[in-house]
Image (tube, rainbow, N blue to C red; front, top):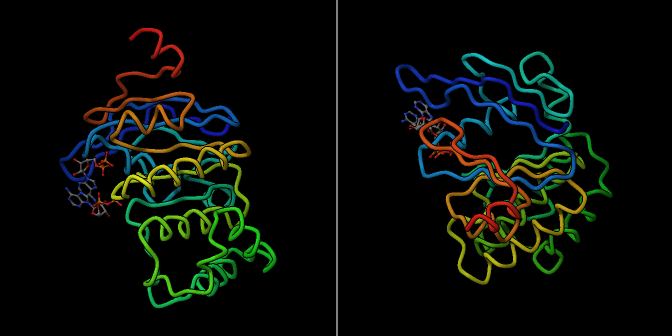
Length: 219
Ligand code: ADP
Ligand code: ADP
C-alpha cells in the first residue's frame, strides 16, 4: 500500500476539519480527492506530507509512519501545495538546483525533471516571467526531483486557463503511469480526466470511495 489512513481526526481549536477519515491507496493508483472548499482536503494532504499532525488516528505512507518516521515519508513523497511557494526572482534551473541541494539529489536529475515536465524551452527564464501553467510545471518538476514513489498534488490545476488546464492534466496523466498519485480538486471533470478512483469528502467526512468505472456505470 502507498497510503494507509486510519481514523484520522483533525481539530483546529474548535474547528473540526477531519472526522474519522480512513482510506487506502494501492501502489500505482491515481486517486482523486474531491470536495468543496473547506471540506478538509488540504488538511489531509498536509498530514500525509507530515507538515501537520493529526489530533488522533494514524497515517502511513510508503510503509512509513507520518508521525514517527517523518523524514522517510518526506523522502518518498513529492508534494505540490495548493499555494505553491516559488521564488519568483530565481531562474527555473536555479530554483530546482536550490531544492535539489536540499534533497541532496544529483544535479543530473534537474535536467531529467525539466524534460519530463516540458520545461526545456522555459528553463533559462526567471520564474516571474512564466505563465501560471509553466509555474505549475516548475512545482511538478520540484515535486519529482527526488524521484518519489508517491505524488500528493493539492488542487494542481486551479486557476489555469483551458489550454494550460488540458496540458497540465495530460502531464499528470503521463507522470501517473509511473507513480502513485493522490490529487485534490473541487471539480468532477478533473477526476474524470485524470483519475482511476475518487474519494469524496464533505465537511471532514468521507462520503464516497469508488472507481470511475463504477461511478460512470451508475450514472
Ligand atoms: P480544503 O482543502 O478542502 O479547502 P482545508 O483542509 O483547507 O479544506 O480546511 C478544512 C477546514 O479547516 C476549513 O473549515 C478551514 O477553514 C479549517 N482550517 C484549515 N486550516 C486551519 C487552521 N490552520 N486553523 C483553523 N482552521 C483551519
Ligand atoms: P492551503 O490550502 O495551501 O492550506 P489555504 O488558503 O487553505 O491554503 O490556507 C492558508 C493558510 O491558512 C494555511 O496554513 C491554512 O492552514 C490556514 N488556514 C486556512 N483556513 C484557516 C482558518 N479558518 N483559520 C486559520 N487558519 C486557516
